[in-house]
Image 1 (cartoon, rainbow, N blue to C red):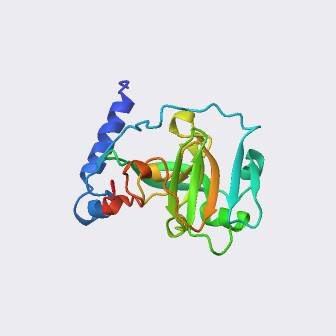
Image 2: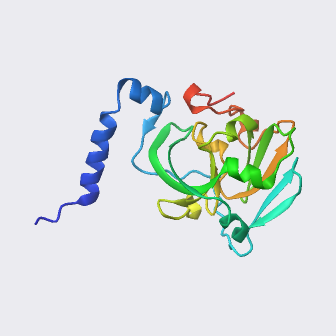
Image 3: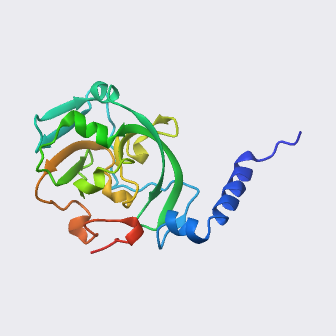
Length: 210
């Protein structure tokens, strides 16, 4: 049997599948202005922190019943689920059917118990990155704290060991290298938001820049 180039064949199969995404199906799945990629571009601030999981802590603070420094062991004991979601980047690429595993954020909220008056979540990364999202946006059922990508721990180039995935927003609205979650009542703009990116970032409304 000939030794076909399986990667090449797979790429052609994906191209055919994407070509068939048309009409209402394409309109509902691929946001305006986006191009589907078969790769997985790497975008960050130029810093990819090395993380020792034994020392890793996720700082939970602000409007919560109890401030916490969650260890990796504690996080791994939380409810987990596999997710297949599309990822949309403000730089105009979309990657379809990305396979993740992580903690459903609605379940996470039950554990960390934010106070009733919180309205915004401020995310902090180990690289100094910050971004803000509304309570409404993170309470969607397909929002999750991801720590597995395609069956393996998320590598640092893709934001490991943990990142927040909010599928309907552009990728910059979910911090890579996640190290802190602050629950607040008053909004606080993050790294890109103060640099004229849109404060909300809905990919399907093409909310790219302020």
